[in-house]
Amino acid sequence: MRISTRRRVGLGLSAVLLVTPLAALVAAPASAAPSTTTASGDGWAVTRAPGGYLVTVDLDSPLPIRSDAPTVVVDGETIGLATQSADGLSLSAFTSDPAVAGASSAGAGWASQATAGEGTPSRAVTVPDVAAAADPLDVDPSAPGDFDWTESIYKFGDQAIPLAAIGGVRGEMEGKVYLPTTGGARPTVLLLHGRHTSCYTAVTGTPANPARWPCTTAPGPQDAPYATGRMSIPSYAGYDGTARALASRGYAVVSISANAVNSNDNELAADQGAQARGQLLLDTLTMLEKANAGERVVYHDAFADRDVSLPRHSSTARRRTPCGHPASSPGRPRSTRSPRRRWSAASTSARSA
Image 1 (tube, one colour):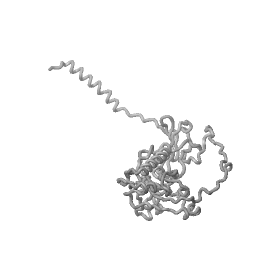
Image 2 (cartoon, one colour):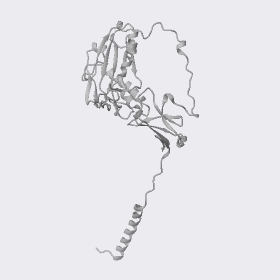
Image 3 (spheres, helix red, strand yellow):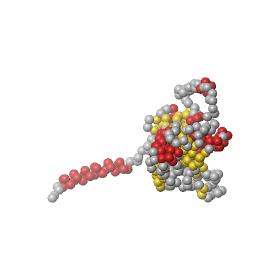
Image 4 (cartoon, one colour):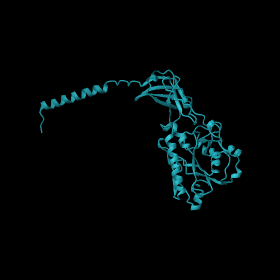
C-alpha cells in the first residue's frame, strides 16, 4: 500500500506539532507548592488543614501515663485535647479557630490544668453537699462483713482480645475475681482502674517501652547495658481492699486490667480510650457469662501465639469459682480462701493501692 508524499508530509508536521508542546512542558521549571505553615516557633508549628488548623508541639520525651489527658496550649489558651504521635515525641491538636494562624507561642498542657478562652462559656455547676444531708450509716462499709470468699486471678494473655476504636491493637483479658462462697447468683460489682503507667522494671534508667504494649524486654541504661525485663503492673490488684470488703458482704467483685488501653489511648483513640474501656467491660461480662454457664472459654493470645482456655468445672465448683485459672497460662494463678475474721480495716487499707 502506498502513501502519497503529501500525506507523509502531513503526518510529519503533526508529529512535530505534537512533540513540541510536550517538550516545552517538560522543560518548564515546576513552581513551588505554597507553604501550609502559618506560624511556627521553637518546637511548634501551625499548619493549614481541611476545615481549620493543626497545631503540633514537639516533646523532649514521651509523656507519662497519668489520670489526665494531654492538650495543646496556644498563646496561653487551651485549644483542645491532643493526640500523641506513635513515637511519643510530639502532640497535635486540630482547631477551627482562625486566631491560631498568627500564634506567637504553643506548648503542651494537661486537661486538668486547661485554661479556656474568653469566648468559652462557663460549665461550672453547683454541687450540693450530699454528704452533709445524708443520714449517718449504722455500720462502717469498709469493715469486714459476715461472708467468706475466694480470690482468683484470670489471665488469658497480653493480646487476647481486639480493643474497640483504638487503632486495631489487641489487649489483655486479665483481672481478679472475689467470690462469696455461698454459691448461687450474687449481686456483682465491676471495678476498672484509672489511667496509670502499664509497665515497670527494677532497673533504674531503663527507657520507656517503644512498643507501648505489651511490656517487652529492654536494653538497660548505659551504666548497666544488659537486657532487663519490663513487667506489666497489676493495677487491678489495687482494689483489693474495696473488693474484699464488698465480697465479705456478699457481693461478687471483678477487678479488670486495662493496661493496653492506657498504653495506646493518647496515640490511637479519638475519644481517649472511652469506647475501648466500655467494650472491655462488656467483653469481660461475656467471658464470665460463658464460664458461669459451663461453656468452654478460650482466647488466642497473639503476643505468645497460643490459645489460653479456662478449665471446665462441675456445677458445684462452678457456683463457687466461675472464673478460675487459664489452663495453659504459665503457672497457676493464686486462689485463696480468705476467712473473714483475718482481715481487719487496717490490713485492707494497707493492701489497697
